[in-house]
Image (cartoon, rainbow, N blue to C red; front, side, top):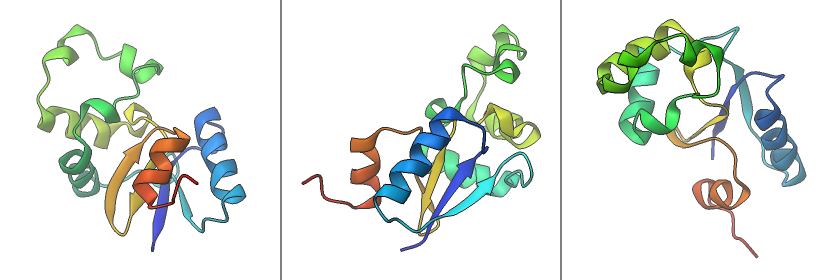
Length: 119
């Protein structure tokens, strides 16, 4: 099983996820989206798997700066926006075996999506 975690190192939610992954002895590759922004094609595959709504970092300055018309954007418009500014992406984003499976961090959800038992 191959796991990539996309995010930024100083994100509080990412730090919680990293700690959980380490405590659970899960091997993963971290990709810093500030230093290595994902390609448009990669983002498009994530949106196809997860939808654009859960991928939006609605608490960030980049999101607030977009204006109200963002509420009517299509999936394609969001792909373009994510590709131009990776800070619009909610963090962390988990990719398992090449497919985006989860965005954000909740222990129960990560156990399920990464295939770990809850017992």
